[in-house]
Structures are given as structure tokens and as C-alpha cells.
Image (cartoon, rainbow, N blue to C red; front, side, top):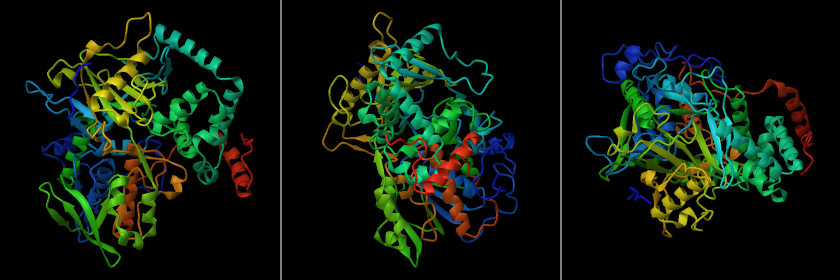
Amino acid sequence: MSSGHNSDPADKPTRRKFLGGAAAVGAGAAVAGALGGEASAQAGRRPGLAGTRRRAAGRRVAVFGGGIAGLSAALELAERGFAVTVYERRQLGGKARVFGVPGSARGGRDELPAEHGFRFFPGFYQNLPDSMRRIPFPGNEKGTWDNLTRASTYLGARKDRPDLTIPFPFPWPIPEGTPPFLTPESLIATVISGLQSLGMIPLPEILHFARKGVMYVTSCDERRIGQWDHVSWADYLGTATRSAEYNTLLADGLVRNLAAMKSADASTHAIGLVGEATLWSVLGEGNEAGGSVDRVLAGATDEMLIDPWVAHLRTLGVQFQVGWAAESFQLSGGRIASAVAVDPAGARQTVDADWFVSAVPVERADRLVDRRMRAADPMLNNISKLRSDWMNGLMFFLKQEVPITPGHVNYWDSTWAITSISQAQFWKRDFTAYGDGTVTDNLSAIISDWNTPGMFNGKTAKECTREEIAEEAWKQIKAHLNEPGKPPVLTDDMLHTWYLDPGILNPGTPQVANEDPLFIQTLGAYETRPTAGTGIENFFLAGDWVKTGLYVSTMETANEGGRLAANALLDAAGYTGGKATLGELWVAPAFNDAKKLDRDRYRNGEPHILDDGT
């Protein structure tokens, strides 16, 4: 194996559905301003903000954390005239950042682009796309939103069996240039694979799963939160007494790749909510204007989103302190008087502001919020009850383009719950502009299960060195894609190099750790999660782990968390203008009567009408 590198604010301040999309900022002058050129004084403003942008005393905001949540809060507050400074300990973008592969650049080219995990933007996202439309990008009418491109399939790859391709034909018509959903070969394989699975899952189990799916979709919100959020996905589906194929396709295989969890740990409400949203999206319902079920960026995340976002925030007066890590908050008289941060030189610095937003990941927030803060607001104790797990990226840079499918791949039989996407087919920039000029594609993979032994080496990913992780993951992928008697899809000589997420520290040792774990939705976590506003009048929380509407860890929930923190701050500051809009998941009206019936039953202490106890 080749060696790898590693060492519209005027809207009411309530939730609303985005039916027509948010207004886009003007591209011409706004784009010029974002890139340092001459810009209109109105560049980047949203409708309804006239008279609200004047700087005023008591409007200094310190945002700790420059990821999606922090940048989202900064955007909403800066547009409303607040003086925002963002403090980020590593690199702007947070878990959405792109880190170059050290030492990979040659001949004036950029370093090979690697990432914590590939990005994708489901059509049911509402909040993040609204922000993207307001971030100018050269040549784009709708800002960075126009950098999204459609992925048209989902491939379920199987080991020693034909693969199953799921096409995404909605919305219709299909844009010109979109790769075909199915080829004759993939259609044949899909039919065979589907029939095999049907043959391996007994009919009673199929009926059981269908009934369980309908039961969740027709459950009232009260039952979803009060009952299903306290039941594991495994118990809900009854996996203990079902077939292996049932578990592979409908329980563990689905959950591990979706949320880095096992079905025994995952909340049914978390999985059911995002599963329902995905189903409607596939059927062309509930998508934001112009959205489709699966979209990716047409290039590296920093080039397509993060860098333009930061440039736009600078035009709004936002300042950035990169390399500054929050260490503590100083509480006095029920307010945060100041914060202490460590600067790039390692010196402790006092950060003065009127308002403080913590937009750091949950595990870091748990360390930042001290005993006095928790005493001032006991809700902050809930942060310690939330859990994280591992879900990290592994890049395989290839010497030839390998478009496995025009979308994501789920290696269903992979013990490490691997997923991937071939990026070159979606990117506007040629991969030869990176590295030494010989890399033409990136098979961007994610390992979601770090605790189950590998298919070949029998070791968990946590037990492996970097080299062993790369070798085992490569073998698992090849075992799914290369079929006996057919030309191989992947061969060792295609591999140029690999790069493991540097957030994995000390791999292969007892001290192995993860700097970038993922917040997971365990039982009861919906009610446990803290709100963005706290009992400390000038302190707010932002992130995918605060109490948001969408209940999984995504850039969408991080963006929503940033908006919620901004709105809580605006309320506390007595701001009288419009607040940040908050999108909602689409609700199928056909099930309103069924949900009303279930609400009555739930309030009377009765089970769902479809609940037979199995």
C-alpha cells in the first residue's frame, strides 16, 4: 500500500417555513466588497435592517468558536450592527475546515485538500442555505448557495454481493449534465441485490419495519419527545429477535453511518426525525427552494464556503482572533464580566465584551462552564450529561478519477461503518491544481465505528496505528467494490497517498484520543440539551448540541444553534428589529388527523394505535 501523509430579519421572530427561499444579497457590489474592491454601503444587508446597523454602546460581542455555529451567530449579529470579535483556537471553519496535507504541495500548487469528513447538504436544510445565499461569491447570483451541486444517487455497496443503487430523480426535471442515475449494469445489480435482501428478510420482519415506520410518522410531537426519545432504535425495531439482514439494512448499518452510533444507543426520535425528513426529501417534498435530497459543494469547503463567509464578515466589521483558545469566564453579579483566552504565544489575555457567546463543541463547553456558572444556572449542568462519539475522515488521493457513483457510497457490510464520495466528478477545480499535479481524485471516506474489530486485521480502529487504519479501511472499501470475475474498481496502483484526520491523536496507543468527536443523540438527550439562552444574562450557547429543531449533529443544526444564540442575545439587548429567521422541517398534512388522534391517546396514557408491544 502506498505510504500516507500523517504525522430577512424583518420577519417575525418566530419559527417559519422557508417556502420561497431567503432573499439573496446583490452579487455585483457585494462581491466586490467581500474581495476588497469598491462596494455599495448596502452590500450584505438584509431587508428591514435600515436604522439598526449603527454602532452603539453595549454592543460588543465576543464569540468563542469559529466553526459553523460561531460564524452563523456572527453573521446575524453583525448584520444588526453589533461589534463582533470571533476567537478561534485552530482554524476558522471548525469541523467544516479544510486542512492541507502537510508537505504535499509541489511546483507552486496548493496542498492536497483534506477534511474532518465530507460535506453534504440535504434538501430539507433551511437555515444554512439561507445563510449561504447571503454570502457573496464572484459570479454567483445567489452567493455561495450557487456552489452547491446535485448528487443523484446513493450506492449501498455489499461485500461478495451485487450493489444496490438508489436514484434521486426529484425535483424534476433533472438538470442537464447530471450523470445518469442508473446504467444497465447498475440496474441489473440493483434488482439482484434488492431481491436477495428481500429473500433474506422474512416477510413478517418487512411488515414489522413498515408498521414501525408509519407509527413514528403518525406519532404526535409529545409522544416523539416524551416516549420515543427515551427508546433506543434497536428496541423500537426489535432487532434482538430479527434477522442479520434486517439489522444490516434497517438498524445498525443505517444508524452507524448516519450518526456514528449503534442502534442500542441511538434515540428513536433522533433517527426517526431525520429519517422522515430524508424520505420526504427523496419524494420531492419539504426541500428548500431549489433543493434536492443530496447536494455537495463544487469544490473544497474553504474555497466554496468558509473563506467567502469570513471575507463577507470582515466587510461587516467582524474581527477575528485565530489561535486564541477560550480558557475561562469570570462571573460577577450574575453577568460574565470578562473571559480569559490563551493567545498564539501561550499568554493569557483578558477578553472584555458586553455579550459572550460560547460556540465551542460540547466537550469543550463542558470544561469552560465552571462551578459558579453552573450554580447561577443549573441548566448548564446538563452539558455534562451529553455524549460524543467518533466519526472522522480518511482521504484516499488517487492517480486516476474513479467516479464510483454520482453520490455517496455506504459500505453496508463494513465493520468500521465506512462511507465515501468521489469528489472530482463534482468539483469545478481540477485536482491536478493540488499536490504534485498527479492526483486526479479524492475518495473522501469517513469511519463511523471505531470500536468494532476490522474485517481483515481483527482490530478496532482505536487500536490501530495510522498506517493500520488506512490499510484496513482501504481493504474494506475494495472488498465492497471489487467483484470476482469483473475488472476491479479500485486497485493499489491507483493510490497516490492517504491522509487521516489529524484530530486523531496517538493512534495505536493506550493514549489514543479524538480532538473532534461528534455529539450523539442518546436516550433522553432532546430534553437534556440546554437552550441557547442561559440564566446568565449576557452568556449564550451556540452549536449543534443546544436545543434545536433538527435533532442530529449537522452543519444545519450548528447554523440553527448560532441563530438561536443570536436571537437570545438580541432579546437580552432589547433589540427592536427583526430577528434571525428559523426554518422548520416540512410536515406532511396528510397525517394531521392521525397525529391529533395520537395526541389524545398520549395525553390519556394510551399507546399509539399501531403499537402492539413488539
